[in-house]
Image 1 (cartoon, helix red, strand yellow):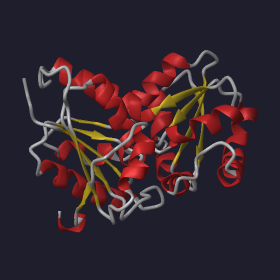
Image 2 (cartoon, rainbow, N blue to C red):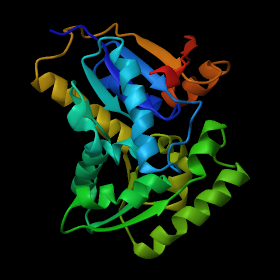
Image 3 (cartoon, rainbow, N blue to C red):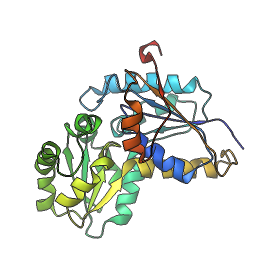
Image 4 (cartoon, rainbow, N blue to C red):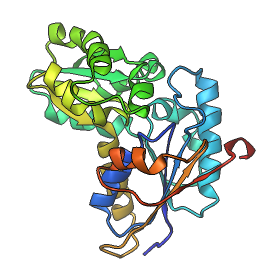
Length: 266
């Protein structure tokens, strides 16, 4: 048994959708979450900058003596292969698990992918899907800032207009499965489902969380508790209003406060 916590990070609060899944599949595990809210979004940055940010995020989480890391960020996951070899801990991103889930889900072998500009530029999901799958990817750069500002509900004319523009190419493409390649995107599930009826939506954060749970289970690294796990929250910008936004991502009321971290010192 290993009672050390699991570390999870994302460029903002979208990674809390992955934390939500971890809390369901591993309810006894303690979790340390870091949301880089001061530098969100990562998607428009260069690969070198994304890697530097991710390495700082990892070093911060390592200060808690964690036992594994879930990279709950599609953008960082797209470049994870460039620095994961230097990490001393087991690490799981969201790309490979989501691609695996999409391969199982698709019936017509056509899979759509939405993500940040960096994720789409990397072609990581297309490569992970492998042969026999026809894939099309679309960058959706406005989704993250809109979600972080609470603009994700049906009836919101701004997000609906943006989503319609981003998603219309998938109708002509005819995919039956769509990978939500950013952990912010599950909050847009209702809007996406309305615009793409009948299309199976793959939550990359949930897929990553399930993959990490299997990794820890197979390695005998679970804590042994079946309930009672706690989550500790950290952000890199003003934590005021954290509870309201975190409650939306987690789907439950969050009374805990987040601690502000000077991430540039790591």
